[in-house]
Image 1 (cartoon, one colour):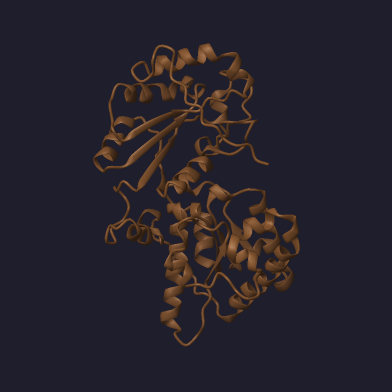
Image 2 (spheres, helix red, strand yellow):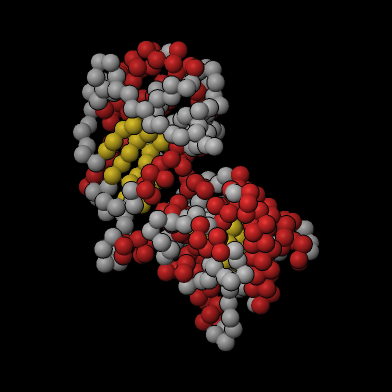
Length: 369
């Protein structure tokens, strides 16, 4: 049974407000159409950005969902995988327009989540994301802003009700033809790739290989890999990397969100680099492609054996395109209590890139209010 709508969003944007919006919009659509909640909407809660292929549940939802609700932000447009999801629905919309040119089609509903620094791409603005029915503050600031301020509570609720009605009306206008088979994930270009390339002045050439990219590699183990190496594991995550909270409990923001915010602020395209055993070869290829690479780790992570070899090989090489950042959390009692031992560990892994006393780079994250 097809879903009424598919929610496409950047993992960096996922917070309690976004969760609430998921729930409220799903419930409001269900109130209109009836039936069970599981057939109303699809929201992927897993880390597609670490995957090499569409997951079966995600692929099915992309094939059969009637409408795509795209939560637009700078993080969304920076995400290659969000661009791929958007591209699938864009192609379905175009195929439907060719098959039924006499009919009006609303397949993609952009929702302005956080107003992006670089404006909205043409592939988004071709679909109406503002409407006279929606609150004025939404068009100006985005829905995340509306939800954060209690004085806009009624405007938010009104927005959800009106959006739900528009989704149902659009879904009832025509049944979107299901895609038989999705082509491989690697073969689907990002819908935002051309827009970003044009902005960089590359005459339509993709950003891959240009200095407008910054690749982040989070050298952080899964929570279970640190058992026995330290006591509190609250800041770490079983999915490792992106979900690591380096400044817990002072600030619970994830390192992936910090990195994406920095890339957006610098008007660079955010990409990720997988930590592999052939680390030096990866960097050499990216250096030849003129891409910036930023490694982020902490002193506890370099104690995990499977990272020691690649990191030591990196220490022995010199690359002009790399930066290596060590997050040092003074608010963590264990880090403060064992700082001398941790500095020695860092120097043992990076004897050439740290002085005798070990280099410390403190990345200060503001606590959430």
